[in-house]
Length: 337
Ligand code: PMP
Image (cartoon, rainbow, N blue to C red; front, side):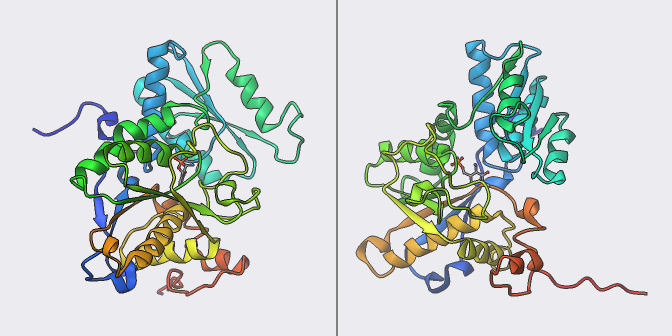
């Protein structure tokens, strides 16, 4: 019989899918090829399952997290889901602190795993006792509480150094020439990129970043794509790893996200569309050059599009922000009878 005893054994070892239609003129060409690492196939639905397990196991080993302890993290996104899932599997309590602008759907996913969600008002100053920052600090200082802090926890990039990087090296049989990933905390690109460069220093590591974020020289100007870009430099980001950062607009990220669903049947989130846009731009730059012939570009797709059905995949939402709408994803429902 083939089975695992723990859900945690299902994390990682995600497949690579060659992109064909969305790569346009590259279709059928000898090289470069673009391969997508499909991270929504992790059991919690995103790349963040990797860091959740590694951060929790390291805190168990160091004694920071004791049996019966409580994990406290100010997050409502994929890291929250990963932590809630691993905590449930290992018998820890979880408390997530999130601002009131976070959708009810996201809060409900965390609650479904048995986590507690504390909602804080957005309309108060950071110094206010009810602010997001103060509430999470207060909860994290309770006895038995432990805060992973994905932005500064070295086990975030380390999980990618130990899993994502070796997987890509093995899956491409050492032929990977470029690694493209969106940058949020910086854990994915720093850990994976460092591992790959240690195997072959000529592997090019390319970050994709929303226009306005610090990684591409911005100051934190608002953008709509979720999970990537920052208005500060996190410790999890290693500035020595990326060879290049490609800035991608919201419009290009969302257009590619929708194309991936219709052309590759890949229902993924906006940060995946952003990263693929950058990867295809790179592929076109390499096309026809001697370097391009053998180029194997791997792009990481962090999560599924299910969490964005009312945003990226909704024509009205896109239209409201002035993004081009093609109408194809929002076919009106026909009521019969
Ligand atoms: N995309 C999504 C949807 C994410 O949630 C994250 C994590 N913030 C990223 C991309 C970026 O990954 P990292 O934090 O490892 O840079």
